[in-house]
Image (tube, rainbow, N blue to C red; front, side, top):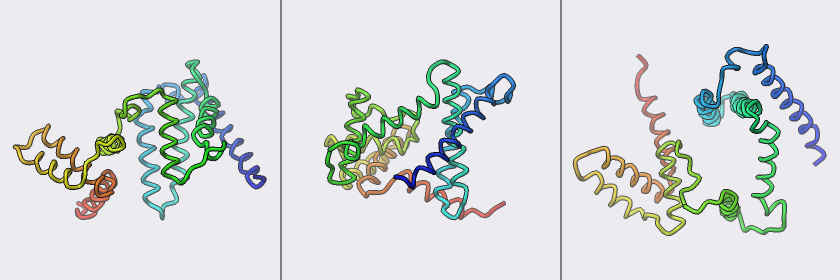
Amino acid sequence: AAHAAPILRRAAAALSGVVAVMARLRGEDGCPWDQEQTHESLKIHLLEEAHEVIEAIDSPESEDLAEELGDLLLQVVFHSRLAEQEGRFDVASVASALEAKLVLRHPHVFSDVGVSGAAEVLANWETIKNIEKGRSHPFDGIPRTLPALLKAAKMQKRAAALGFGASEQEARSRLVAALAPEASRESLGEALFWLVALARALRVDPEGALASHLDEFRASLPAP
């Protein structure tokens, strides 16, 4: 649309500036700290910045979201610059691949595929994604490093789509059974698994539920 053209020009100019600054920081006369960084050393910063974005989203009265998104964008630009120096890809490749992915996975927008609603959009997205990645196992593509509660919920959701979901009654029964013997690492792990299943049966996000309770717990403790 015509009204979007000025925004696109501003975005292109601003992003070009960020890429140029990063190239300078990683250059011979750049910043010693930036020059020392690797993909491995930046992992913790990427994780921290993602969590800070989430915290800004969870604090709607805060005006930090734009800044935190910028910090997260920095990680994308930084890793892209490292990869460029390694001869692997550059930030333009990242953006081009993202554009192609968005077009391919939205055939209801960019081609003549019809959908009945958001649920079918998500189903199509997963189908196209699995074809792209050549995935055959239902748990392929679930990151190993996801927080355990979130990972369990994702695995159970995929299992449920194949007919292996648990009802509320079954989840409750299995949870009680897991807690019945003497507590051990294994039994507690099983109990947490079925607690996630119970949360899913009740349509509750287990990660969000625990996060909310932790906020309440923090607020309940007096400051030293």
